[in-house]
Length: 329
Image (cartoon, rainbow, N blue to C red; front, side, top):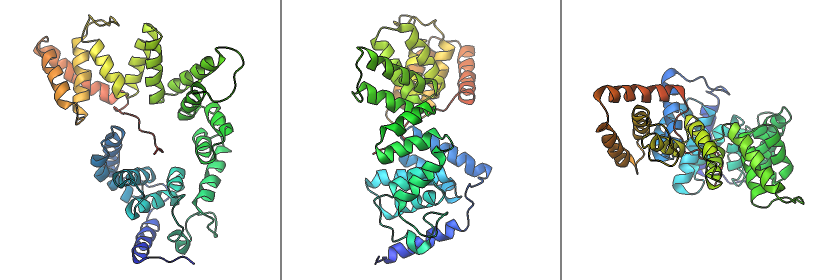
């Protein structure tokens, strides 16, 4: 028999109250949507503590993704699953968020059984592991590559990773390339392993998966493929890669650079300004000094044009990101 502490009872009441007051897919007000967008931006730049108040606005409105990410922020702050992070994971799990269910695998079932809400389609709760597997298998049967990847994470069965990659899920393609590169599976023909790993890395990059684009740039640079590195750096910057943006801005600000980009001070200033506006704690002053040096080479009209270019870039391309994995350590 499960013994439920007073704290668990209070949390159960809190969860039940929100569950019965929210729809499965929350409709956010414009203000809540703006808060979520800001929270995601900060979270993806690993400014997790700053992201929490913004994510909480959307999470309290019933937004499943915000609930999961808020749970992640709290879990990372304490380095373990405490009552508060568990509560947000449970709210997301009740809306069939598989990653949230996976976070709850090691949690006892004392809170969920009294509510009888741990798996909406079943009157008998059999544990979060069963619930997560059922939801993921249902989605995988419909061709959902991310669900296939989740099944790989749960089971460790490489068939699911291969299926995820073949279904076009960028993260699955990337990790399949990593596994091949690190020695998984048997290849008889010399060079076939690297070619296969490269194939899936390129597929992941073409799926706009940020870490794959950054790794592909690095590999191309090591191989001396200047043209390929330049192409993927520009493309990765447009996909939001902070690292690629830093390189791209530096290259077009200095014609002596190895890559021989045409000098474009307006664009270089605009891209650097975008980096500064991301307010990265460890590097704001460094990039502000870079802006100051660029301004000395520019006319007032060029600086004004660069400010407009920065706004154009932010409206046209993906927000800056360091691409934290959604489900990691």
